[in-house]
Length: 402
Image (cartoon, rainbow, N blue to C red):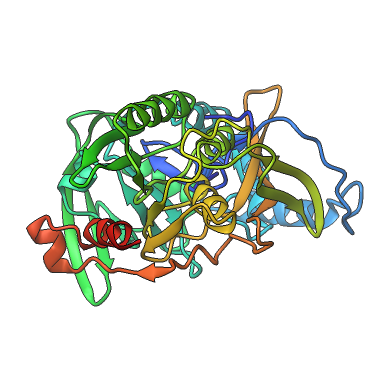
């Protein structure tokens, strides 16, 4: 849920569930669309598929009979059925298409609460299927422990995550307030064991201030249902203060709701500008355009992104860049551009299934590609240790000279 997973059920969301990306550990989600991303719960698409309308279960029954007659252990009918349903979802090879039992579905929905209990990081899977950190939440236990975007989670409490689904990893990382979890982290050539105390996490989605030189600084940490109202209030305060240049900080933003991304982008874009397209295969099934609330239109802007910027954050950065409203600086973004739909069943179980992909205004697919900044500025280990921010410094210098 990465649904842009990192990740509120849409309206239309981008992690995890939005796509990306992306799921928060205990954290939010999608994400994957949520976004991830964050999820869509509306559309029903016509799916061109070569799959038969019903399956011949004779071969499955052969396996079941052999299992029933030969397995030396305890196994219930519900376990077998749940295993079959999980396997159907896993057969897609898509880490964001997941079957949830009733209890798993309930747990998943609690992840959409803006106040969560966990370590405060969004997780996703990389191209090799490794569980990785998309971004730690500012002020969270994960951030305090030093977790970084792209850290690989090799073990949780000494249990290997190899072959685990994203949702399974999330479920074992999550836990009650005050309990601890030890993550075996691979960071480049380093192997680290990091012990983290879980806590209740409330995520502020927008912060703002005015920097030296009358530069407005707007940080959006997640796209939720109150993000636009907070950002609009900040934009009005910039107007009143006579701000002439703006830094929009989307670093370590795992994504969220698509509508929030559209509204934030619209602060810079005049009405009816293309923000993104949603495609199913090669067919455009939806497109999103700016709403005209362009309080910051024409103001020179730098958007900061890094490897923790995913789904809805990438949609916003791409929309402003491709429409000529901003320069992008920092490091290449995560690359989460798929949306999931949550389909509930009568018994309380559900299927989270990838239904479409996001494309930026210039026609490029976001998924697995991310956004390459106009100007790449890296953060070193020393920068993290010393609390210095060369990316923000570079953004201010750029705005001063342009």
